[in-house]
Every structure is written in structure tokens, then in C-alpha cells.
Image (cartoon, rainbow, N blue to C red; front, side):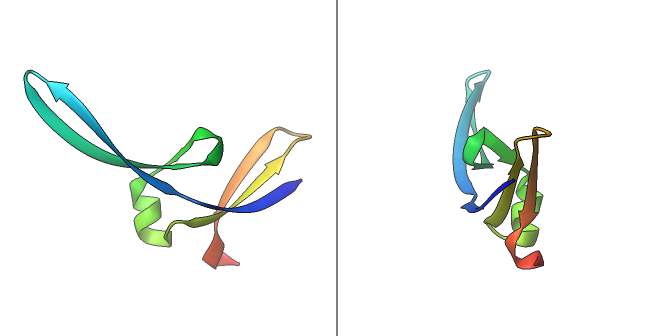
Length: 66
């Protein structure tokens, strides 16, 4: 099992609907994993990423829960 500390990146997207432009924000982790905004608001941007290559599972845990 590989374990590493990662930080969520804040990205801003834009979408045009019927001539009006809307902006939205979302957060990503390495490996193109999306993380809900509510989780970042609750736990912050630092997480532990555990990759189990044998079973193919990826576990994301807030860093401050340890």
C-alpha cells in the first residue's frame, strides 16, 4: 500500500447558458480525483491518499483525523 500527503487544488470553471456566463468552483486531488466542496470546507485542503494496488482501492482521509 502506498501512502502520501496531498493537497486539494481549487479550480474555477465557466459555463455559458443561453448567453449568460456562470462561474463555479470545484476541488481536485492528484490522479484527477474530484472532492466535494463541503468536504474541503469541513476538513481543509490537506489529505492522506492511500492506494492499495493489490485490491485497486483508493482511500482519501483528512490529514487532521490521525
